[in-house]
Length: 465
Image 1 (cartoon, rainbow, N blue to C red):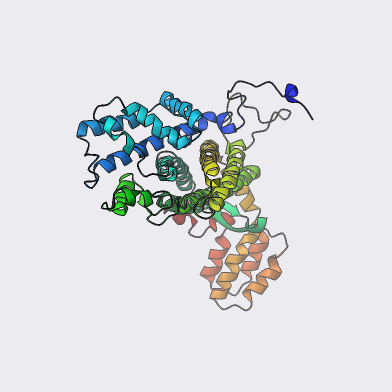
Image 2 (cartoon, rainbow, N blue to C red; image 1 turned 90 degrees about the horizontal axis):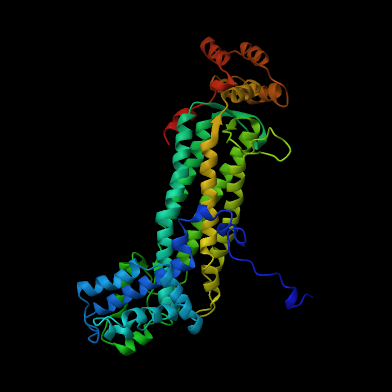
């Protein structure tokens, strides 16, 4: 077993030495999440919660020892939040080296900043008053996730949806052979297939946007024990509700030491369902590129293979699929683990919550790759038409359905015997149709039908999205 002297030499932190690709290869793709779901984001959100709790306490008439702050004092307090930067976050981390407690370090940091302010120095011991760490943490994570959803993830999803809608409309009438079970099937249009994905995405995004993020501020085990013994005359549930809702979160009155994280599980599940819909899209587009239904724009200087110069690989869709998969593995763990806590509280959630940025970060990288891939696509109508022209058997459905309408005997069985497992050509199908005892107008309509013209209402449906 190697000894200490055999350990590798420590390397400087850089994108090249990052263990996570989110801090290395993909670092630029997740910059928008960095201020929100990082350690800095967590500390910043904690500072905001502590400051707003202090202001809320000052607004409570029953707490006579803490008179209401005037507008200037409130502004100075909130300026601590608005002006919070990396240097101040580092100061919190320096304090934490002594406290070995991250939330207590935020409390001490704020007291350090306020002690020189004549209007705020008397209020120092009301910083973190009656709070357990989870009163601060649960609200901080609620704020972080709310901001990440509205400022980053929702716009990224909308960007994908916009591209899908544009492609669906542009190709609403472009005929395409369907391939149910991988076999030739009734034709559709390229636009309608993209519209199907867009409809699914919109529904899942609606559920993602609608997840209600909850918060609590009720003390060590959720009963306002310390609050009630210090100020029994204060209506603490009412004060807590005003405070939590003032932060833009929904109030949860029934908790243990922790807000049970069901809402975070719901948000992770919703993001996971979005990702799953888009994995389905990535795989289908990958297949359509392989069939030649789509070509991809060639980027100057880009190499598709180290040995095969002709290759233009569907790398953006593969990248997106892979990152969605990593995201879903993490999001699934978050959703399954976070709502579970032993008795009134265990600490396993603390470690897991810190990885939220990784899960959403991989989803963001995937969304970026998917947008790039969609932007490179060009339909190949000639290839689409060629496949359709080699699949006249798909019109068997149309013919037997018209036969049913006019009462011809065993239409399905006749077409099955004629078409199943056989090579059907335009001529052989038309010969079959010509021999049917159908009204002349119906026979002529079927004789004029082609696979490319047999797309039902697909164009209309694609344009309706």
